[in-house]
Length: 86
Image (cartoon, rainbow, N blue to C red):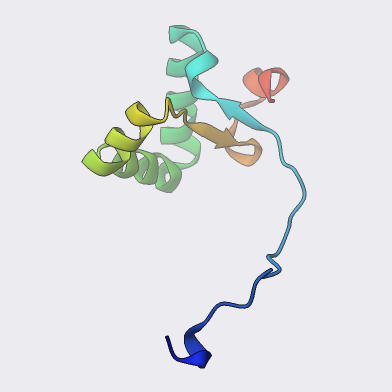
């Protein structure tokens, strides 16, 4: 491997502040419906992105394989569900 292509280890990575999110799999059916209606009406771009991502067969496979869960960022969570943030 040419020297210029070798990674420098350890490589520093940017870090951020922890932001709580809403784990969709822990919601009741009624709460999920409320969240989805809120996303579609107040954040249509986010709703479209979630739909596209969750319909991707590779993402679906990874979610099943690693017991994955969808977490919604605080800024997209309706007031009625803010108390459930983790």
